[in-house]
View 1 (cartoon, one colour):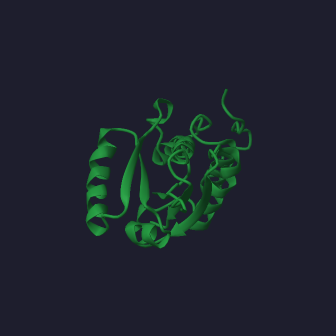
View 2 (view 1 turned 90 degrees about the horizontal axis):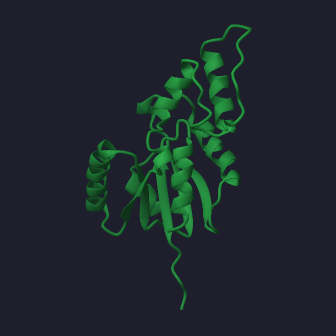
View 3 (view 1 turned 45 degrees about the vertical axis):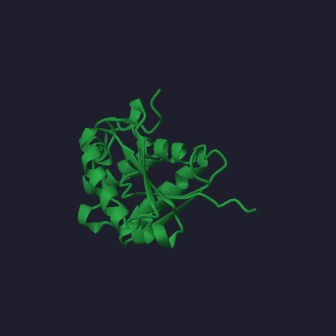
Amino acid sequence: MSVRKRIGVYPGTFDPITNGHFDIIQRATLVVDHLIVGVARNAGKGPLFSTDERVEMVRDELPHISTHGATVEVRAFDSLLMHFAVEMGAQVIIRGLRAVSDFEYEFQMAGMNHRLNPQVETLFLMASDRHQFISSRFVKEIGRLGGDIRPFVSPRVAKRLLSRFAQEMPLPADTTLPLQAAP
């Protein structure tokens, strides 16, 4: 008797990927055998990084997190999430929740996805308490305004963000921005 492999999709824009996203990825690998991190093209959100850059950012971080023996792959998609999940052979869509406001949106989305395909379940994972307030939007805003983003993203992601911000608005020559992980 063969055991069916549990496949999950964790979709998002990941612009940029944050420590909160990595927390969800790690915890999702406790409940699936294979996790596909689906990077949505989602040009409507006006991403800071291209889809290819976001895929690369996520892939670059995977060796630095524990996946509990599950395999993890990263793929870009620009279709309906349910179509992507079915194409990937997923039985579950993983979604992270930070606050009640997330729940309302995600609850509606899960209902619509269930109507589209009742064979694919949505699994909500609550953000860990230390990551509940992190959002990619806030990280970008803090970074653009010269704030310390190190507690919210990996050192590698921080470096990419700061480099991108420097391209957008060059900083004075005497400005130094820390790139080391916060204590």
